[in-house]
Length: 330
Image (cartoon, rainbow, N blue to C red; front, side, top):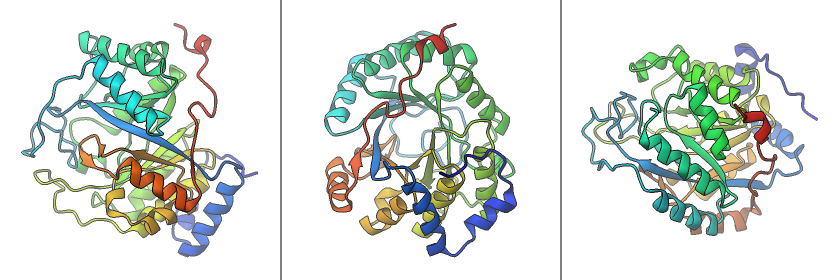
């Protein structure tokens, strides 16, 4: 079995990333197949529970209040609306629901109380519940854990060196501190990044090094291709090629063998053949449903046809066990 390492160097990761493409995919696929469940792909559904009006200045994001996009700002959804959406997603094959709110940080107020109710309600459906709500304190992470949260998403987006070019309203350390708080609450970590922001290959390698040298690898690493949105500073960025996605996925699979590598934003631009290459390179999770927060995504039906053709099957919820309630007790 492949050794789990947390001491990767940039040079080692760069050597893997730059290896001949077919060799890279073969090596990643071999490591992926050491896990007998390589044909299982987790299907997650992403729901925007509070849309737009965010005070941050993330250059890629249409939800930032300062950018003039066509996005319609929407208040926090009701617990009933979220529960109904979760039931529909589960019936369509999703085992995880990720709830995203366009907040800079979680505040201890009635809105957060309502999110706690949402988490408890979706958890009762026997689905893995994930949230992405911005920055989080340790006590807030504990509250979410006690309500039944399974995972918390907080992407690094890019390398530490490149970060200030993309976002100025928070620091890289803010990102890492939130991930630490999530770990302290014994929640699983979902953290990855976006390629196509105008970053260098060295930035991609640096981000992978940060992820793979954490004391514990993130349980889930989303690899996103930028979806340029009119009105944002990165609206005119050229789209990345599928081969750049394949290189990122394969490298992530090799250096983080047990992590769920999520083929995330950008799938609408990919053919089934492109996506098949990504699965072969080690991707074993997708977001399904017509939207990824605010950007288009392939439909559930299209994805089920693809799964059938490629011989993939949906992964069950809580495959690696549920979090221990005792471990998260305050």
